Image (tube, rainbow, N blue to C red; front, side, top):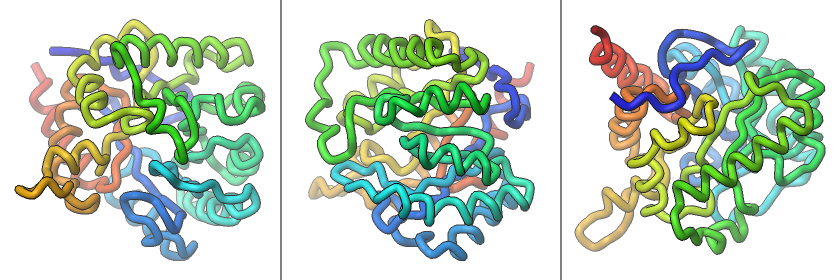
Length: 285
């Protein structure tokens, strides 16, 4: 059995002894999977509480869509979207992650109760981010990234996507170390769908064990991604709509849990927990 990055312990985060479930709360009008559904702050808070009740180990709150072609909100608007949600969910006992590329958002989010920074740029979008993370001491998800949403797919060119993503992630981690981020606080994310074609994503999944060379736990964000929509396309070649990709996501969650991935970022928490429970049972001796 492949054991990718193992179920490493990350200080200050839940340690259930299984793959963690990170539930998604998009406080945005334009996310690819559920744009606008949780844009109202009350709806976002209620949704986060529902995910907590369904068994989410971490709730990832984001105020900027990173779908291909998305435009960035102003900092003030991103803060308006996420801070009230983080405060309410943290007060309810949730372990909250802030999904942002901006230090100016991460800092007040941490003050509001966020215990993890999930930066899809891996420190490359804001040169202040890694220093902030080092100073705050919170765990940090460093994702492989080549550029912002408006043009990232133009950078989806690789001779060997797996070796290049590993090498580039290694460089990003070196920069985090140089900024003072503790090694045991770092989590990697291959960046499925970010500057990658559908075929690139499948190659990454097929060779996931090669990421063991990095030596850090992995968060996998594959939920409802476009490459699943392509796999499930109809007879005319039209991709399966995002909200109809949950069954495939659950199947992939099972595979990832069997491989020992540290965490999965999902929209459907209960299904994710069920898939991981099945995987855990199969892994018992």
